[in-house]
Amino acid sequence: MTDVIPTSSISTPNISQAIPESSSQNSTTALASDFETFLNLLTAQLENQDPLEPLESTEFVAQLAQFSSVEQQIATNDALSQMLEKLDATATAELSQWLGRQVEAQSALAFKGEPIQLTTQPNSQADEARLVITNLAGVPLGQIPVDPNATEITWDGTLGSGETADPGLYRFQLERFSGGARLPIEVPSGFAEVTEVQLGSDDVQLVLDGQDEISITEIQSVRSGS
Image (cartoon, one colour):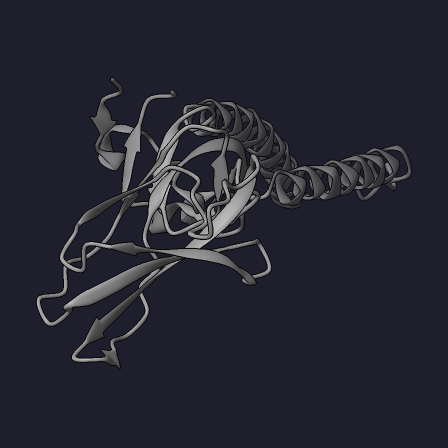
């Protein structure tokens, strides 16, 4: 039996504070170019100054101070680039923790011949309910009656017409009724395995084995692999 793990126990990189590596590299390249140009100009100025009217000491000191400032800025950018590389490696390691995990979400689920456990929200007004099984495009393939007040539904692959679904990917809808009037349709949730993690500009996307791609904020719970 697998253990359900709170989502807070798995680290997620702070995307909002990430700095594009290319930006740091471009800044360093530009500074290095300016540094080289400044050095060439200063050297040429010293080589061609009038011996009878040499460069004023105060102006020379000011130029050396500028020279030192540019040099320090290049060193700072190099250090920042190294820090970003380490942060990127840390973020990648944190994201890899999601791979192989089972996450609960309202997504397509893979039927592999074993029963699928679905979770629903109770509705005290319902006196009748049915689980509708559809393909990935949302086309109904079958339906089965279920307990209208159930919070958990086990689907064993039955399509309600004496047929059993082939292994594959399926979606589910829960239709409830009260006195013959249909209540709002609910999409039950189930566990699916994370097969890929994508780092976006402001979010983390999880790709599931049901081919769905969901935001990390959409998952309801997490458990270790099956």
